Length: 374
Ligand code: GLY
Image (cartoon, rainbow, N blue to C red; front, side, top):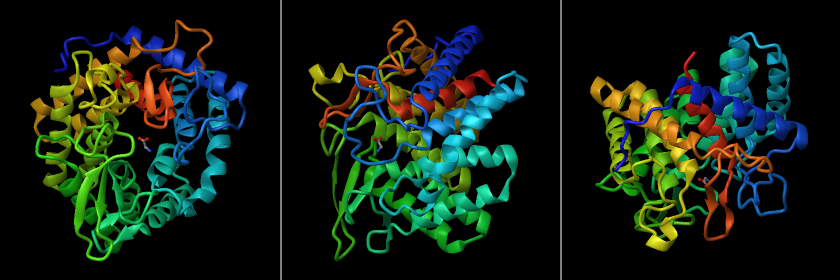
């Protein structure tokens, strides 16, 4: 169970943010125009397999976070951060029509939504709405879900992090059809992927003829009936976002169930094993990226919780996790190119195991930004 007495002081948070900003600059200057995914022995550029192309929004998303903070602080290099953020965001635009991935929320909300909020430029909003519309094309009436990238009969918990862009497009366009798709996908995910104890399955499989739900299974977790910690963190954050858009109490209840499972089942420092049900010898491998996502999700859930005591609890746990992650930074290892050590991508394929991973960096930055405040 997480003990949440340890909160990082502002100086620890500021040091961590300063280190993250330096590593980000190093990445941009060392490998210009390269969109990394995971490190190999601490190096971003390598020939390792991608499995699927879902990470390109995270680097520009981080650049926008840094730009916003630096501009607020009237830092002399704020302009440089803005130029880099635009340089890495623009090439993503054609992917608003990408039908090969279920990740258009990751790819567009991380950079374009931040860019739009900073500028109010309607062309950026149009890109977000088009990407939301494209993602909605994955919806299957039989089964009522957005299909994953692997096959027609497959639903991933990760898609709960992406469905937000459909809600966004639905609300901006006042489009009842998109709203209905987003709601039905979220309710199906809640019904078939979130268990009674708040744990989650990675994947659900459906009968293509009848739409009947068949079974829970996994690609990146230990087993179909286990709880892959990153999937749990995606659910915690994703259902919180879903509640933010809809105010449907069913989504709040699900986000809280996932958060409560995370708090009860994660070790005291708030950093989970890669899968809660993996055998003990394998469970010693933590996934700091799951912790970073959970921290960012808990900040979001804390801010949305109608019950102020629960909101405060989630906020405190988020701060405690951020404090722990500040102890996992790569700072003492000058050769390491990432920010946060000990993330995991795909343990069975041996991709990015005990490495820095781009989504871990992004959600750490988002959580640090929330913890630091204005
Ligand atoms: N594809 C999402 C993940 O690896 O968590």
